Length: 144
Length: 164
Image (cartoon, rainbow over all chains, first blue to last red; front, side, top):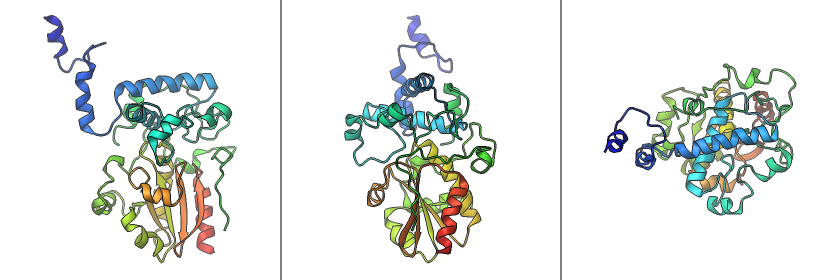
């Protein structure tokens, strides 16, 4: 009925569509990009955790955007937001172990984030924002 | 030879003022210039061409196959930056290293390694946190910088290696 018609009306960003899954093959085919859903989950988590921990995003929010996408990518592929700023012999084992799942143990214990997602105010690279929009993330990672 | 890995402290130098004067020659917001394209690094034979289409002297991608000739047998000192695909600060350091590659053209060769695709090199050199910058002279690793540092920190390390 009318729901079918609206589901296929291209070009109009449908609000709260129940057919999200249909769009995934397109993004997956394009390149190894994390899903929009995971990016938004990690974006919201980052905003919340920055506020909660009293830390700030990097003055260059391109850094923030890339890291959030990296977390989302690991969430998609491993089921956990493993830190994208480390090299692992075995990512799956590492994600299961949990030490480097965001927020990692050094962040939780000492506010140390070498990925520069969460920076204490005294850090030279810290900006003064604790929020980042989906558009900012898309814009600053568009040419990757 | 002095090593500048700082495993227990935050990997950032404290500089009281104007922290971006060196790290951000351009105004910082949002637009990271990203000369490397993580998803397309798997074709080693094509890499030099792709890379040089932008600049003649930027950090060149290197793989396991090219490692011995490019790094260990190099007559000039070599700088290698290890990065991961989705590592935000790696892009900042890569940008700095690209500048250094231009400024030190002829005196220092700069390479980049993608640890996601070249796991063997990463493991050989026990790379954990990225970015990592290694300096080689006469086939020997002689310095390493772990984390994100201001440009002059890398320059100082390079100068020490060149003079040694």
